[in-house]
Image 1 (cartoon, rainbow, N blue to C red):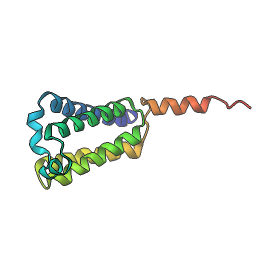
Image 2 (image 1 turned 90 degrees about the vertical axis):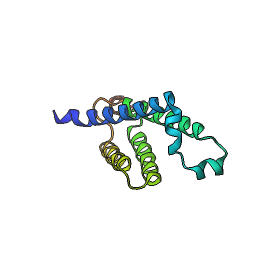
Image 3 (image 1 turned 90 degrees about the horizontal axis):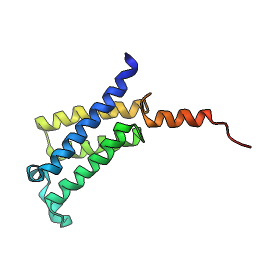
Image 4 (image 1 turned 180 degrees about the vertical axis):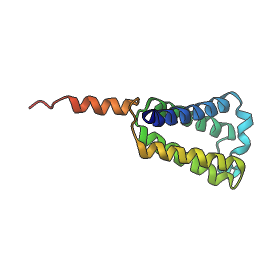
Length: 133
């Protein structure tokens, strides 16, 4: 059963990011209040644009994490993404939840490719193929 733990963790975290991304795309106005005003003022982008960019980021890296493709890179980028959200939100219940998710991503990063990830199978395949001379 232990061998399934990293797979379940990786897939569960992926689903969390994909769910949040879908909510941001379907109800953008609900999320615009979380975008710092200073970010809007300095860039000229609208809050809705930032929500859509955030959702796109979470879809791309949520899917790569789900597939286990560039597992460590995806987990690291998503963990850093959550760290930026935590620092922006300050101490709150949402920030504490995100801190827990960030630590779960750090665990995925530290573990790396599990048996059901593309990374694992790509590495396995490359080890089985002998180089031609």
